[in-house]
Amino acid sequence: MPKSNKDVVALYSKAVWNDRDLSVIDLLLAPDAKIHSPMKTIEGAESMREIVEKWLIAFPDLSIHWDEFVAEGDTVVSRWTASGTHLGGFFDTKPTYKEVTYSGVTLYRLEKGKITDYRALVDMHAILSQLEEYDSIQEALESE
Image (cartoon, rainbow, N blue to C red):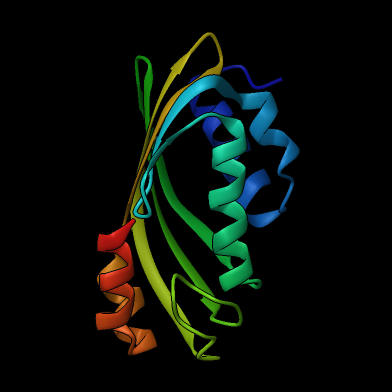
């Protein structure tokens, strides 16, 4: 098992997003964890799994590079860059088959080795403008 909060977040991030090992969600996410994503605010492992699956359906070849992890006390921040091809539905859009690259920052709060708060700040404008679907996806985001 990871020894530090930074190790927990690094393991979680890489296992879930790049290795597609969604079982890690149950291991490292607290049962009542709050997840603040660009899609919506949700709670718990099952909801997190659904969000991850939506991203992976839309971008099945999604690959994330972590530029850095910074930890202080119970908080870890990761800065990352992602790229993938839009091959599945994303909100109300059909696949565009376009490659996208975007970046983000994720803030994690941990207690006793479990993630209790997950806050993803994703450059949605970069994604939407590369897909050339800005208006339709923005409407879908606002209706959720």
